[in-house]
Every structure is written in C-alpha cells, then in structure tokens.
Image 1 (cartoon, rainbow, N blue to C red):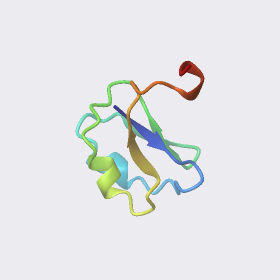
Image 2: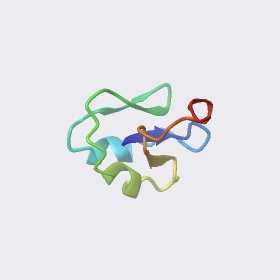
Image 3: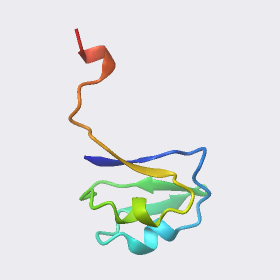
Image 4: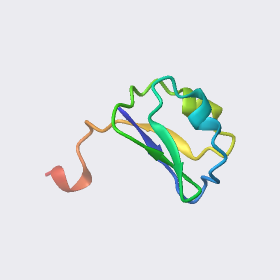
Length: 67
C-alpha cells in the first residue's frame, strides 16, 4: 500500500502534513510529496478536504505486467 497524490487536486494546504504520524509528507512547490517510510495509515487521506490523496495497492500487477 502507499499514498497517491493527485497533483491536479492538491492545493498544498499542508493539512496532511500535520496529521502524518511518521512525518513523511512534505509540501514542495505547493504540492504534497510522500517521502520513504509511509506506513499507509490513511490519516492524510481522511484529512484531505480536496480529495487529492488516496491509498493505492502497489502490489497489484500493472497493466503492462498482465498477459
């Protein structure tokens, strides 16, 4: 699992940064960026008023990996 940032929705408000328990979210160039160490707790997703963050399943096979 991981956090995906929709850069078109993110306004860089920083609300996600404030609730991250492991401190891996930063605001860079007015957009949220997820650093290494995310525990996929989802607190940032639930806090984002802009719906710019979502949990993703990084272990799911990518479209090009499927035959």
